Length: 403
Image (cartoon, rainbow, N blue to C red; front, top):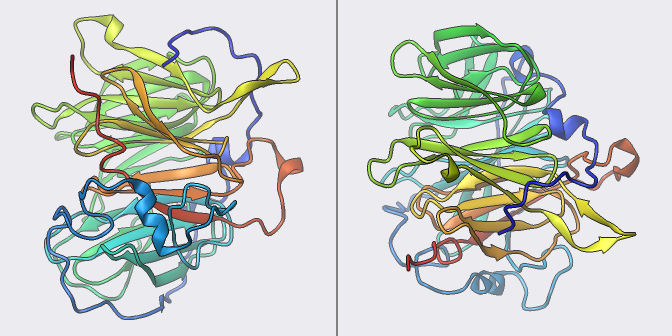
């Protein structure tokens, strides 16, 4: 892993993707209609950690998944991962699995710039079935799942937040908002508790919100002009840190990681438009524990320059605490932050990878491809759409053994 902190030679300008701009989901009226592709299966999944099926912890390589699609190399799918059917018609801006609950299926939700939220059911044998789509008339910037313990099966409208939520049965409620924190592309931070929607705090920020993550009781918010703010959400939300980003350019994504000993928030990884990630600890006795590394850059010089791509998303493995990054170069990479080394890098997709998420079992890595607007409107291709893939990641994301 390259830990040098030299100036980036060149980076791409951002507009829609970098700023998470577009119509704000919280200011739109949603359609009171959910189109179901099919009914939920009657079989119970039980614990998804059991070592059976393509996504089980079988120790097989990820290439095994490709047998469900094609044995030949596909230029649209060079990593031979499982392709999700009926993908969004425009770039995916939000991607998230539902929580693990015994007896419940694995569900994957995606929100995109085509104004629709889609839900698929993922079988342990690698098959994926579309379950629902909801068009809300505005670009969806963020989504999250809430387990309210109530088997609701109808469309839910929350007037307090001007938000809409589709309930996909079995007590899982899909909320269209930003992980407790509402404020994308604005300087007003609104924190609310789910599913009650009670207001926790409304905070005026010095800059616009570009990225955020929540792992109770910690919230981290990345702002314009490299501002970073951390909050303690235990009780009344309180600001605990206001620092400048260690990265030289605009923040693009952030993800909190846990302390392996007590599962409490321990720090975060911050990605930027300059092809670099910073790993920051909340509290550390040794400042050298914090570091940055380069990623998502062309391996060779192009016209005497290295192509530098944005880091579009970061995600931590729930069991191994290793890190996944996806970028504008169309690759996903897995990293061991403790050993400070790269574990794996994928083959390049034809389009940038815009979002990713790891299922709570630690077995499935989901990622979406589509145009990320890092090269502006001139490079956009009409009708290019988006694709979503699933990769068996349990083995690939295991950390290096300590020496």
